[in-house]
Length: 99
Image (tube, rainbow, N blue to C red; front, top):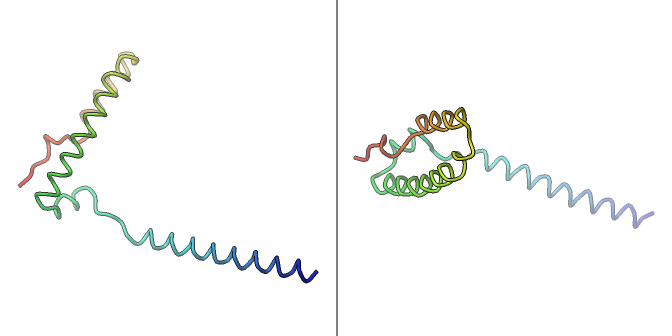
């Protein structure tokens, strides 16, 4: 009986430590939120904006390849119209200015 009680106490103690650690890490994660969108663009310097545009261009090339070669040939007319509408709505590097 004493051994069972000791084991239960040890499991309860270790579970409590893990739970407290999880709660603390979740609260710490929620405190920091990276700046995005307009706030990021207004605070960024020229080098950071250039790096953003280069990364965006690389990602866009892969997106275009997958969409143009993979998805569009399999779509009907309604699907192609939806893709064209989606392409008009996303921001492109040509719409962004670097000072």
